[in-house]
Length: 149
Image (cartoon, rainbow, N blue to C red; front, side):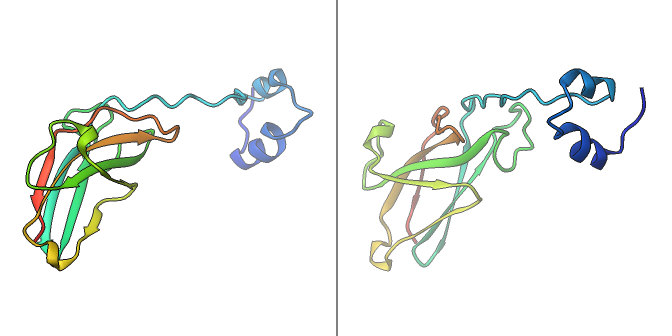
């Protein structure tokens, strides 16, 4: 068996339609499977941190729960495409996710919501979950809330 330069292996061997899987293995190269690894539905809920710096702006930051599998505690877990937020504006907290009538998705931290200055003092309530590239949702987070400043 002999070592193969990586560029050579990609252009001349791995993508060569004449090479069989057995030929590739003889060259010390693992053949491509031909099918993609399925993306599992997210198993954990995000932890949401809310900041309301003022001027009608509310920022929602997501992070992985402590001790989550593959967690660096910052950003999204592997296989997650977005964080889905459902929220409502009102005086009383929702008792279930379905009561939230507004929805937003974010693939980057933070999700920045901007409200009219006339809404100052109103309360925002909501939940969040991870969503993978197949649009499968994970469990909902603990509720979050803040006032518009």
